[in-house]
Length: 373
Image (cartoon, rainbow, N blue to C red):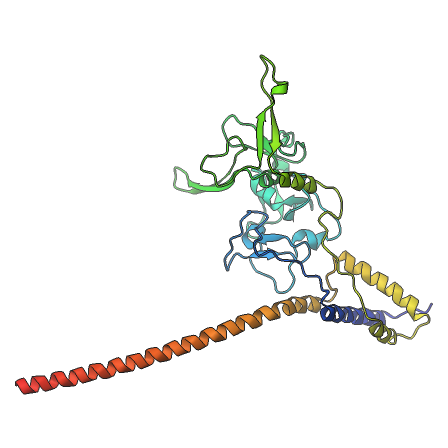
């Protein structure tokens, strides 16, 4: 087999990428993650947003996070990827502080992975940069006793748990488990004796949930009478009240690599276009060469989870999908401007009539004054 120069190979990859992109645009088979309008931030569990704190969606895994919650002060143009999809797109990551494999991750100083939610709630953990919320540090400052706690929700002794803030209650649970179970978790702000504002994380187990809480736990502990004997302390066992929570917890601790893998858009080129591309190179057995080229191209796409290899195609892909929305917005603004112009014209005519009326009143008043004098 004759060798293909690097310039020709790069030209073939570039042409193949463009033809695949145009083919997917024509057939409408471009993978576009479905964006739920009612989606909530996976960190704060709130769906409210503002102009300066919008909810961002990862273009690979469709993760929904607030700008402030994930540390994104500026919205990037074109594609946006979460840290997990950017640094480890094809390999699942594990949180140091809990067994959950889904959610919003950030890396530590030693390149390990931690949920942003876990870093916010475990007292000893902090962020090196409070604006970008990365990297996460102080993992080694977590006491050994916290690593030995067992979560009463998933009943696993992994990671570092937090405990109920109620006095003399030592119930432990993972932060992500507590969020899934609907436990009362609030970040409260209060002033100390010196008048300084202090932030405090408050989390309750299902038994000590405040009466005025706006959440209802999906888990409940009851007395296990079968194990209770005279003179012995009555044990409590946890009962999951919601079947959806059971499914979430099972899916949450799944060790399968593809459990949270995004859909990969495999490139495709029409046969006529493929013949045109093959004519660009003068080698023997073009079909076998193109099969190898396509295999290499497919592996590159899979490594990037289906994202185009050309940056300008990523940006144009985003603009194409928003073109229809922008056109609708422009029409609405045009209608509003026309109505505003019509209203202003009516107001101008009304002011002109009032001016003429007042001028006549002034003229009559002068006549009355002259007549009386």
